[in-house]
Image 1 (cartoon, rainbow over the protein chains, first blue to last red):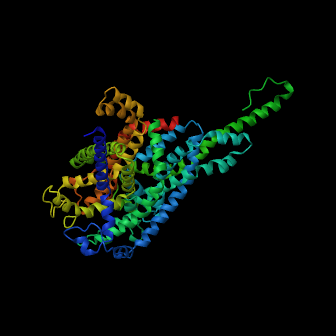
Image 2 (cartoon, rainbow over the protein chains, first blue to last red):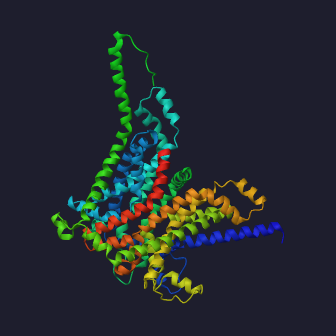
Image 3 (cartoon, chains in turn yellow, green):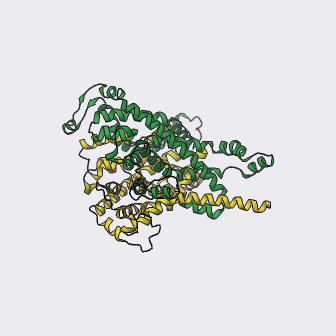
Length: 280
Length: 323
C-alpha cells in the first residue's frame, strides 16, 4: 500500500471514530425527540422503532393540556425575566468598577464574586428556606427571584467584566479628552459596544435560571406556583404505567427555548471562558 | 492631571487653599465612583446571602423543627447537632461514597473529554463540524430533561438501553432493572453526569489545543519524537492551566451534585445506603424538617467545598486582579 493511501485510510478511521462518538453522544437527544413523535404502540414495542414514519403530535397535545403546564411556563418566564433584568443592570455597574477602576477593596470583591459561584446550592436550601419562611416568602415567586439573584449576579458581574476588558480603554479616554462626561462616554461608547456582551450574558443567565431545580423544588410547594422544571420532574408521578410519549414531548418542549438560545450565544461565552483560562 | 503648583505669594494663599480643597473633593469623588458602582451588588448579596449565612450558623446550634419554624424561635442546644452528625456512621459513609463518586466522575469526565478534544483535532473538517454541533446540542440540554430521557432509556420494561445491550451481545439485559442495586444506580448517575459534562470539557480543551504551535510539533516530529512524547512534552504543558481549572471546577460541581442523583434514582428509592452529600443534606435537613441538624450538615459541607475550591478561586482571583 502506498504511503498516501495509508494516510487516507487512517484519516477515514479517525472520521469513523468521530462519527461514532457523535452517534453515542447525541443518541439520548434523538431518542427523546423520536419518542415524542411515536404512537403508543411504537413506544412500547419490544423491538424499538428508530424513526417514527407516521409522526403524531398527540403527545404534545397531551403534554400541554396537563394541569398547570401553561401556569408553570408562565411562572418560569416571570421568574427568569425579572431575575435577569435586575441582575444584568446591577451587575453591569459592578463590572465597570472591576474592569475600569482600581480600588482598595477590589481584591476582596473579586474573591466574593468568585467564591459565591462555588457554593454548593444544596448547602443553602436550609437557611434560605427558614429565612424566607420568616418573611412569608416561601411559596411566592418573589422569594425565588431573590434567591436566584444571589447566583445570577456574581455570574453576570464576572462575565460582563470579561467583555468589558475586551473593549479598549483608549476609545473612552479619547472621548473624555474631547470633553465628553463620564455618563456621555458610558451612553455613547460603552453601551453600544457592550451590546453583544450584554445579550450573551443575559441569555446565559436566562438558561441557568430556567434550568434551576433545587431551589424551586424547595421554595415552591403549591402546584400552581411551580416552575416548568419542577413541573417536569413531577411528571412521572407514582403510576406504574407512565405516559412515556407525553413525558418526552414535555421534555422536548422544556428544552427547546434553552437549546435555541444556547446555540445562539455559545461561541461568545466559550471564548470568554477560554481566554480567562489561558490568561492565568 | 495638573502638576503641583509653584509656591505662591502670600496674597494668593486663600485662593490656592480653596482650589486645593476643591481638588481634594474632586479626587475623593472620583475614588468613590467604583464603590458606588459595586454598592448595589454588595447590598443584594449581603441581604440574600449574608443574612441567611448568619442564620445558618445560628440554626446549626439550635433545635429547629417544624414547630420552631412556625413559632419563629428555636431553642439552643450548643454543639449537639454537630456531635450527633460526627458520631453518625451515615455521615461518614456518605462522605466516603461522595469522595469516591466524585473521583470516578471527574476522572471519567477529564479523560474522555481530553480524548474527544484530541479526536476533534484529528478528524476532517466536515466531521469536526458535525461532532462539535452534536456536543453543543448535548451541552444545552437542561439537567431535568436529561434525567427524564435517561430514565426512559433505562426503563426495565421497554428501555432502549436493555434492547441495545442485548442485541450487541454484551449479555442478556431483557427486563434488567438498573435501579435494583446502589452500585447500579450510582453508575447510571455517573453516566448521566459525565455525558452532560463532556461537551463543556471537550470543547474548552479543543479551543486550548488550537494554541499548541504547529511548527513546534512538526519540529519535534522531525527530531524523531513519537506521538506520545509530543503529547506529554508539548500538548500537556500548554494545556495545563486549562486542565487545572476544568478539573477543579468538575471536583466542586460533582461533589455537590443534587439534581441528577435525586431525580434519576427517585425520591422513593433514596435511602441512607445511596446518599450523596447533597441528597443526604436534603433528606435529613429539609425533607425530615430537622432544620437545625440540616444546618450543621450544611456548614460541614460548605467547609469541605471551600477547601476544595481554594486552588480554583485563588487562580481565578489572580486573573481577576491582574486583568
